[in-house]
Structures are given as C-alpha cells and as structure tokens.
Image 1 (cartoon, rainbow over the protein chains, first blue to last red):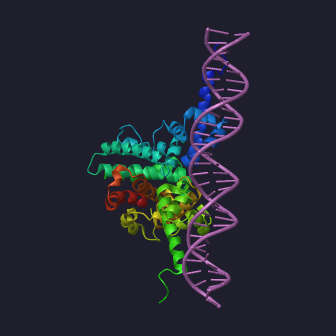
Image 2: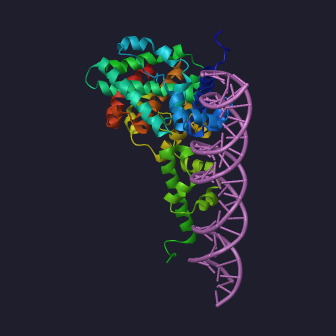
Image 3: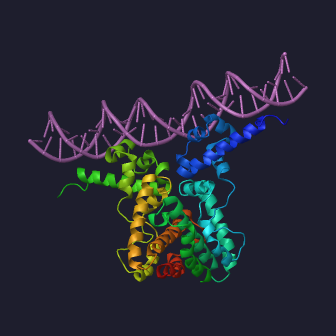
Length: 184
Length: 184
DNA sequence: GTTGAGACTCAACGACTGTAGAGTGAATGG
DNA sequence: CCATTCACTCTACAGTCGTTGAGTCTCAAC
C-alpha cells in the first residue's frame, strides 16, 4: 500500500524543507551575519550538525534558502511600461521571505549585494529597453531605485507614514512619479 | 611657548579622533556586525583595549562615530519645496562616512534602524508640512523613500546605470518625479 | 629626583560561532 | 532475519569576538 506517509526519502524531503523554511524566516528577520546555524536548527527542531550535513555551509544554506523568486521592485517580463505601471500595486504587497532575506542582507553581505545588483541591473536594462528614448537607462535606473526605496521604507524600515498605508494607496500615489520618469 | 604640540590632553584628543575616524570608515564599509573592535584598533594603530577604555563598548563606539550629521536623502530645515528640489544635486553627492555607516547598518542593526526611521520620519513630517494638501504625509514619505532608494542604489549598491552618472544628472532626471509627488 | 597620574599595552577570560567526525537507531532491501 | 543504509544526534575543536584587569612607560607636578 505505498508505504507509510513517511518513507525515508519523503521524511528527508520534509526535514530539508523545514530547515529551508526556518532559514528563510530567520535570514529575512536578521540578515545573513546575525543568523546562526544553531538558531535555524532550533527553529526547524533539528540538530545543528544536520543543517551542515544537508547544506554544507552557512553560505550555501543562504543561497538555497534565498533562491527562486526574483526581486520584485520592478520585475516584469518585457511588459510595456504602461502595463507595468498598472501592476505596481501587486508589487507593493507583502514580499516573499526569500526576497526580504536577500534585501535585508544586501548592504552587509557582499554576495547578497552582488546578487541584488545583478538582478536590479537586469531590470534596469529591460525597462530601459521599453522606454527607448535618450537617457532611458538613467531614467529606468531611477524608476527601479524608487521602487527599491519605497519597498525598503515600507517593508523593512517601517516608516510610520507608510506602515499603515495600503499597497493600493501607495501604488496610486506613486504612479504619476514613475510615469514622469518613464516619459521624460 | 605653550608646550610641545602634543600635550597630554592634546595627544588623547587626537588618538580618540583617530579611533573615531577609523571606526567611521570601517562601519561605513562593513556595517555594524562585521566591524570588529580589533579591526578599528588596527586601523587606528592602537591596542583594542584602548578602544574599550575610551568608548566602553562597541555599541557606544558606533553611536559616537555615527553621531553628528543628519540623514541627507531629503533633509532641509523647513525650506520650501521648490527650494529643496533645487538642492537635490548637493544631496546626491558623496555622503559623510557617518551617514553611510548608519545606512549600511540600518537593515541589520535594530538600533541603527530605529535611528534612521526616526530621522526619516522627522523629514517626512517636515516635508508634509511644506506640502500641505490632502494626503501630504503619504506623498512626503514617498519623496523621502525615493531619495533613500536612489541614494542606496547609487552609493551603497552601485547600480551600474547610476555608478557613472554625476550627481547633477541624477538630480536633473529625478526632479520632475519628485515634483509630481510634491504637487499631487 | 621622586612621586603620581594618565595614556597606553599585554595577556587572558568566557561566550559564541561555523564546522567536523564518530556514533546511534530505525527502516530498508535482500 | 540479517546486514546495510541512512536520517539524525552527540561531542568537541578551533577560531573569533567583545570585554576585562593588571601591568608598563612616559610625562607633568612638586
């Protein structure tokens, strides 16, 4: 009968996911340096040595935990600028923990900085392509930077004026500003 | 004859300043956690114990080293919005190391986060006052967040599209966007 | 010149960290 | 039923950190 619900492979998979999930949460809350293998292990109800056995090193655990989603400040697959502006609201909503972990570490962990810079650069290039005109790259970079700043202020720092504001309200207030950057 | 150029008090003052300067530089480069009392002491060519003797703790060293300047993304003493927009260029120039240290630590060091949040909140309130209309506070917060994001992308992350851009060009490209936030 | 203060260093502590290796016990496969 | 695999734990090492207390050496005051 297809074995107990917990076969060996299945148990392993679940433990691994439990560790990754705990890691994401703690990395997101404290950043790379202040996150401890022991803390992750405790949150996952597992021995610290097991974390090492599965992921090899703290750095690799971070990479695995943070992998997958893209940085949302202004992502979008070659969508026209107008369409993108219409979707800012969604991009202002709650972020995946992996993204928060990445952003929280980016100013103090060189690898995270490199990763974020790369992703943002890609968004800039893509957006500049959609804009087209003269100094499109600069203006695209400012659009991405704006989204980055608002996201940080809203989600990571918790500016009081933004803390209570709904994503929709923020998006609405922000749209003209971004449009003026896109149009030039 | 007013004594040799290095009186006792004078020597002490200089050593203290040398430590503070080294601390500012290293805190700015690595953030709070990754900065080591030993590294600061080495950079100041001093024994680590002396740093403790002068400042009591790493946390106090940080506070003293980072004290003084205000967070510049959008500071200004009750100046009218237009005047402020005219001065964005200056605010986009190179930052004081103390400010960089503060910003670099703000996502991973709770005390730095609290400090930055407080200063930015104050700027928001001040700016909202200058704007006046309906949802002035939200729009002021978005202006401050925008400056924050551009500053981070430019000075801390080094987005390639912004890295080479002069402060003046950035300011010029950014002005319409900020104006649209200020006007509503 | 002697004394005392004060700038500064030496050596070490205890705590915490990432990490490694040997071990345990259950479940798997023959 | 037995041998082996494998998820998992125990224990410990080596390094680094913030921090401390006792010391040294130099200069100023009497």
